[in-house]
Length: 154
Length: 252
Length: 106
Image (cartoon, rainbow over all chains, first blue to last red; front, side, top):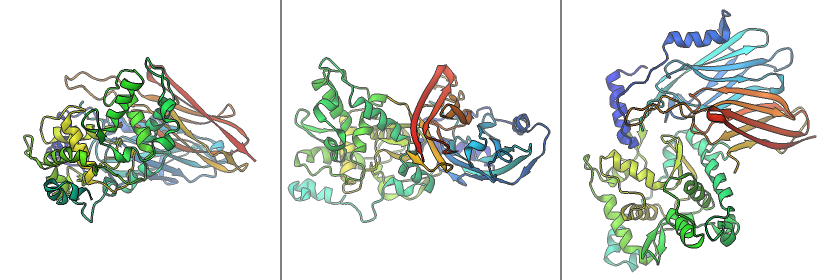
């Protein structure tokens, strides 16, 4: 899924032709896998993160990385006794790993949130839900991005 | 019909009669982007429409006049207006765009300075006015007084230019539906303007988009408000006649 | 003129989960872009979105530069009582906007 640098560079120049802007081939700083893991650890501590309960929806192919719709649903009764406390979204190849941290609670009634995010490259997006019982659950989705965000030159 | 009234020019224009498979850029977008345009609570263009709604009532200029003072409720007075622009203006002796008409009102009637192209206020007012034509069919170019400008616009559309030596017609008449750097080439109908373009992360005018295209083919982009851009706009709207206005549209 | 959009149903049944839709005009400048001369454009983003229901916080989101321009956020809340639902966006350079809407809960 990872495009070779020369193809990505071609796409960037061609995208510049299509978009009508002059894109310089300067690659921005990007989050390393270690930085993403550290960002996740800031939320989860040493607790394990299990896949499940979280449903993350993103289009598999994004028309423009500047605006990619995202929806997260977590399977939870959202009662005082059992609810989602927070949901955290991470990317692996944006300049920094954090996207959004959402704080819910029983007043939400349902654990659903939707927004639009930026993706700098084709990559995997991860959502982690922190439940009131102290457990962490996650889901990941891969998105192909053909026109990148974050690297635009004016 | 317009073609009969235009004589020789009409024969050339008839060649650009709307093809049966004319499609708005909307149809080339992903499901998600279409949903973004359709949902008034999710379409960012509506943020500018709301700004325009506010500006409509603000008294400006030496005349201390608001748009509302002359035009009343935009919902009624502006209905169908954007669908008819560019329109003939006697003072200009030729076509003017909605932006130029708004500025004409600003300068001559409100006695206020003209608003800069792509400024927040001009975009807001244009978006608000255009929104009042949403769903209505584009109805531009039948005015015989616009014949010459229309022919010039058509010639520009077919003219090879820029370092890439491309004409609008090549991509948008011949190669629509095919891919250019990950995006599908649309037919180039200006049904959604002013448009929220994801690439811009902002609302923008048709002239901004045309300038993007011209830069893209490595041609010198005509300045905002230039006769060339107005003529192109006129031709493109004529070419899209009958198609519903989608303003404010969302496009990649 | 209101810079933010807040969509809340005008009325709801007590206990029903309603959907709150919000959107605001803001460039969400990431801080990663550069001018053609190479100068960095400083970050200017909305950092926090807080929703209150008759004064009680019912939702909070911390935004990072990866949230798209003109941030759009949709989230649920339980219609507990009639009153005012308010949303406040705060961010860099002292950005602060509040919008509110009335809800009738029967």
